[in-house]
Image (cartoon, rainbow, N blue to C red; front, side, top):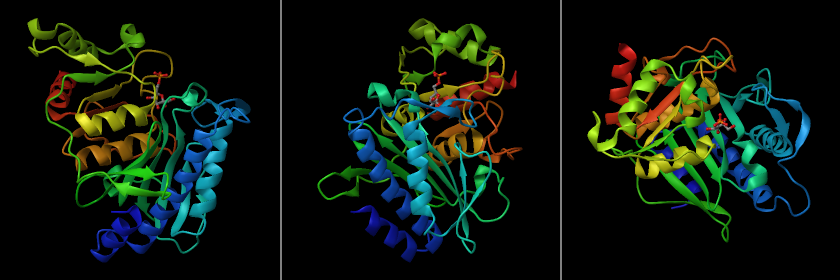
Length: 318
Ligand code: P6P
């Protein structure tokens, strides 16, 4: 089934509103154009080059960061979105005055990987129009695109599971990949940047110690580690075969709340994870129950297979 037909059915079944569906159609068109830029990167210009200036993350902006956001803003401007909240903009961007939804995006997640041909992507969250800052539990829909060996999309509404799509480059449209995905409760795979291990707080340290002890340790199994350095790439793998993703806070200056942003990275990931039967936490509770204090607020993000997440949350309770 095409994404277009999938969205028609969601609209007809009342799982999504007109404005949510029109925003999703706009995001898909923008994503296909971004994927085209990624596929051609390096032919005429390096879209991974720094263009001066920094985003809200304090990261230097890459050409594709800016171009991706321009495309997303352009296509959303004729959709049902009232405002755009973006990692690349300090403040909300007004769009359609009578729109009933707010779209929050990380236009280009993982942009440090653009120039080295590693999977990157676009993360999005769709909220009801109203306060700019709302808990992730309010989301109407969320998902992310990946630009890698395949161009893919994973999408969920407030009801139902997570549906995956792959771009058919010949037809120029996204097609469903099987049925709704769920994240297996058990896993032997984790994703964390182990370079920061001497900075981890005790709960993550204790869990990792247990993991690294393997079959002779408390969890009585061996594990594998994967770390792409691109949230969407690690997340796509976890939604396909399970795993645990950790970007925790640590004692590095300015990293007490981790690196990832609540509104347009952690919240959409947590929404998808819970729709896939998994858990997403900052260590204490559900990511989706956090009331944002600010648009670019950082939050520790740990999500994935429930057995390991329950162990991690138990360790955080001590
Ligand atoms: P580190 C990419 O810059 C990003 O925001 C996520 O996509 C990724 O998971 C993380 O940062 C990588 O961070 O500290 O390992 O470079």
